[in-house]
Image 1 (cartoon, rainbow, N blue to C red):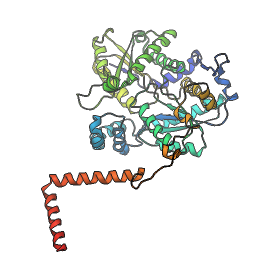
Image 2: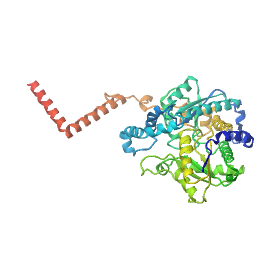
Image 3: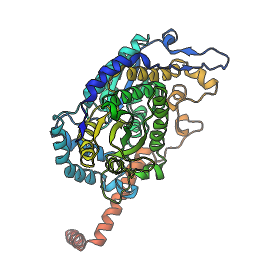
Image 4: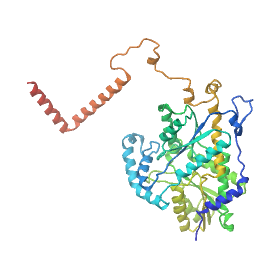
Length: 475
């Protein structure tokens, strides 16, 4: 009989409170431009940084109710960064395919959401994280205002940017709530913001992005704490031999193999760092890595092993390098808030797999949520980006430091040669940019019509009838 300990979150919270003093957060320092200059302590950063700083938290988003599921899924699969078709076909079939996938998966997703209570806790948790982060930054002397942008549901990036403009924010730190970078998650959200940067005149001119933070000491320390606390919820005789199974959101292999996505490498590296962090606090349990959330046609290969397969192999003693497992602790390595993938896939489906394969003890590590050490870590990550927002841009350019493109654009405007008017310009009829665009579209329409007349006998007959009627009228 499996001891299902998915409700260990409450016990874990109590244990975390008791052990919080054992977690030492190492706050980094950032050197100033000159190597000989002293470093700037983040806790005293308010002495050199003035003015409100916006912090934009990015996440995937979740449907508000089961009735929103189909539209939400359509938004997901319309994302050009979610590769469902070859590029040559995507322009024509992306949206119809997204509609079909959303229709096909909607009922199952609705049922899953209802089983979890009919409401995803994702947005409310992120709102709590944003509030806690803002408070932590203010306690450190930084005037900050947090905002939330979801990729596939409300509030969208457009909503967040409107709020940022209303607040008069001129400096912005963009922080994806994904510890690891992937083109399909952080990359997709950042692409939207990149377009807004160059098209929305109200977008803050000074911005900085933290693309990944899986290797930050505070994050590692907070994660190690919740793992240790969850192991402690197992029966005493099962703790030492409990196996840690890290489960990460899955990704099609072609992202890694064809597009150079760093996600898999970063996940594996974070587990190496966590193993060292756990060892430092007396936890030496065996561990392995798996991936969840694969879907689509069977020929689409995803990162392996799947979490279901790994649980089965661990129970049978066939997982490479690991003996037969009797006690299992599931660690959501790429998730920092509870949502459908944790509440249903982990707490229900994977727990059922563990039970059916003979694992006696099963516990799931809760996500970090608003755990103080995690919020502290996020605040430190944000503060790492502040010095670049505070230093004068031209100073950095003069010193030859790498800078973002929009920083250069504060001082440089790009003009065409015609706009500069270095020499007298001719403007012959029909050769302006807008005219060329219109002429091109007319030409394409003519080509399309000519092709249609050639291929379709009905259209050719209509054209012949039109010519005959015209000739008769002329006679």
